[in-house]
Length: 366
Image (tube, rainbow, N blue to C red; front, side):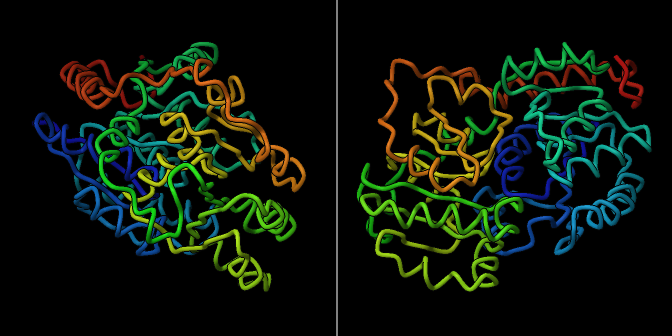
C-alpha cells in the first residue's frame, strides 16, 4: 500500500482534509502532518475534534511572522518526509504551510499534489497569492475547484497534470448542514442577522482598516451583527483600545470562535455575511447567502457574478452601501463548484495517479 503525506496547518485546511483523509485510507496509508500554524485551541483543536481528524505529526510552529514560519517549517517538514518516505505529498490551499510542504516535497523529489490549484486574486501583496502561484508551478498533480481555475492553469502552461474536481468544502458543508442552529444562545433570529468574520492581517494589523470596518457595522444601526472573534482580531482590538467600544455596541454581539458545525448552521440562517475570508466567501455562495468581502480582490471570481459577493475593501462607506443592497435575485445564482462528490473524484484520481507513479518524477513534470 502506497503512502500519502497530507500537510495541513489552518482552519480551512482541516475542513478540506477531513472527509478526504478518511476516504483515502481505503486505498493508501495516510500520514497527516499539522504544522501548528493555527495555534489557538479554539481555532485548531476544536476543528480537529469536530472532524475526528487524527494527526500523526504536530510540528507546533506558530506565533511568528510568515517568513520566520516558512524558515522553521521547511526543515521540519523535510524531516518528516525523510522519516516517512511517502510516495506523494498532498497540500491544500494557499497558506504558509502549503508553500513550505510544497517546497520540501520538490527539494526531496517527492511527487506533489496541490488541491485548490489555479486560484488567482492577482494581488501579489497577499502572501496567499504568492503561496498558491509558487505551489502550482512545482506540482505534479493540480486539482481545481472550479473551471475558471482549471482554465487559468492551462493558460499559464503549468507542467503538472490538471484536473477539475469541484470543491471539497462543499462535501463537508453538506455533511454538517443538517441540524438545529444555535440562534437562541447568540440572541439572533433566522434571517434577521448578519454574520461577521474578520481575521486577515491586512485588516487586523492595520488599525485604520479594522476600525473602519467595525465603525461601519456600528453605524448600521438597523442591522444586527453576530461576530465570532478570531483570536488575532480580539488581540488587535485590545491593542487599539477599541474592544470595549465595539463589544458594547447594541447591534453587535461578539462571541468567541465557534465550532465548524455551529458556524455553518448560523451561516445557513443568516441574511448575509461580512468577511475577509476566502473560504467563507465560498461557503456563503454554496448556501446562496449574499456576501460583503472587506478585501479589494478575491480568488473566487465566480462568487462576484450578479453581485452575490461584493468587494468593498476596508472602506467604511463602501461597506455601508453594500449592507444596504437588496438581496440578489435567486435565479441569477451560478454554481460552478461541482455537485458534492469531490472527495470520491479526488480519491479516484489519486488512485489512478499513483498506480501509474512511474510517470511521476517528483519534478513537476507531466
